Amino acid sequence: MHIGMIGLGKMGMNMSRRLMQAGHKVSAFDRSTDAVKAAEADGALAAQTIAGLVSSLPSPRPIWIMLPAGNPVEETITLLKACLSPGDIIIDGGNSFYKDDLRRDEELRSVGLNYIDAGVSGGVWGLKNGYALMLGGDETVYRHLEPVFAALAPKEGYMRCGPAGSGHFVKMIHNGIEYGLMEAYAEGFELLKASRFANGLDLAAIAHVWNNGSVVRSWLLELLEDALVKDKDLSTLSGWVDDSGEGRWTVMEAIERGVSLPVITESLMRRFRSRQQDPFAEKVLAAMRAEFGGHAVKKGG
Image (cartoon, rainbow, N blue to C red; front, side):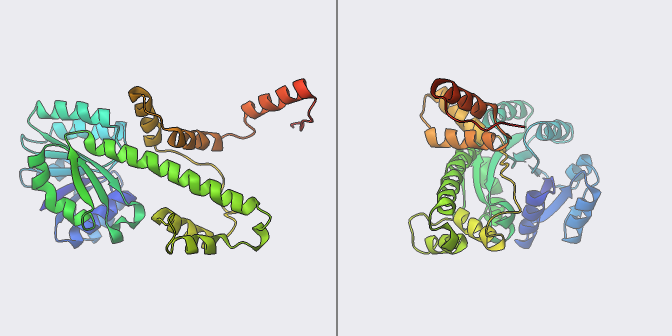
């Protein structure tokens, strides 16, 4: 199949490469001319504009957008609507909010265009190992694109979750679970490092043992082991932890539905806390303890 790829960052570039390795043809566009040249060197058909990318594809044209969620995706879809013909297909593979998918699907169907939302997991390892794909949209369109999905994913690593929006919804919950798992590992290793045995504990070796037969083995733990081998105290890193937005959306959905998600919610709050220096809330706690109990406080600068 001949597919267009818009967005040649770490994900879009490697997805293009994996598709070409499987025998598919890729037309590639990015605002970075260097990225387009790199894709061309790997065998992609270089496009200098979005209109040029569209014109390079046979009908019905499948175009995969691999851009940050929000305005970049919205602006790209607006540009594509002016170039595409009825029956063409837009696939959003970024981390978009599923309610945006519902609106886009309705708007695009009204002008005869098809829309697929693709939740993608696999990160920088996807080129080698494949990407888990969670897909939402019309089943006929999904079946038409299945050779592309099969090329990108490992065996049994892709599925149609349901109608438009369902793919990104499932990916949103996936990322919420990821927040909780990562927080549990972080807390466990913090306690190991604070223990009376800390000086003699090899945290990388512990992660390695746990990954060989224990009930907490996982790919996340493998990645942590790799990081600890490189830097046993993680001294080159700061404690700042960002979030892509999907954890927030997961918690918001839980509130709307009245579903209790204490672990995922707290893991999100911990990420917010990681970005604060000398948080005011802790100053308030210290002040109250000093006032009611005369407890000692540490003076700030």
